Length: 400
Image (cartoon, rainbow, N blue to C red; front, side, top):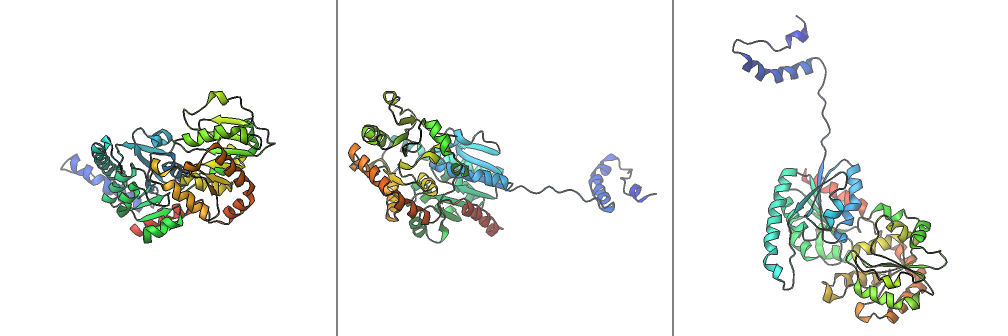
């Protein structure tokens, strides 16, 4: 009898049941004996990304996504059922999207304050269930109220969490999730100092495609001939009504010096201005954004931190009109003041803004463009993609 025959399963007087129980073990022995080792596929690591509410909570995750997929991660995204993040990520190749219930925890009176805590609790149960089902190695949170139940669910299942804080001071959602995270990456040095040993100032993960734009394509899209510098106004994903109005009222004073590209936000187009020479308005930009950014010579913007880091990385002279404190918790004012203190931008407060003061501030910013650009180039790097990816790996090593 050959050695191979000796390893074959033998018949048994007790019937087929015993032979079936012994078959897997005998096959393994044969594999060992004949020097044919079993193939073992590499174990794919899993990561859960979360964050939502505005594009500021979504774009850093989009910036990390291609790097995570290239590193072999199985990527899951937990967001709201119908929010902005669902629209952007539900059908992205390589991303498994999970929608959960969420609510907003407000500092002011609203009738929804009586129902939203129940939605937050429901989202926490959903997130905890998903964490147990997915069994991720790590979670990265960009904040927003959808992130609170997700971070809590990760903590319940001993999944290490890296959180990114965009603003100079933490928002309420990030304050609530702070006890449950291992590391905190911040955009501003003041925030890192405030949050202590867990925190490190790294900048913001930025989408690489932003740096690949073509000025010629941007000018062509905007229908400008390039003979005048381009003033670009961006109001953020939620728009900027007050700045939109002031800029449009100032057009007669601006278009003699600049071609004006106005990204005014959804539903904010003014058909009466469509044929104004030297002025182009669009609701929002998608694939054209890198080209339009490449065409811009001067930027007028709100002071959301992600936009600030993008403009800083692109080294554009910048005039900021932050949201007033009455319309927000005042984080944009602090963001803008931090950059202004370091000589990286000029700031015009909304309560001081008229068509004339806006024009004067833009002209002053343009006159000092060389000084501002030099300061930006000497500032710490705004792109935190590399360091955030390193932190995601580090918390897994410490877990092990």
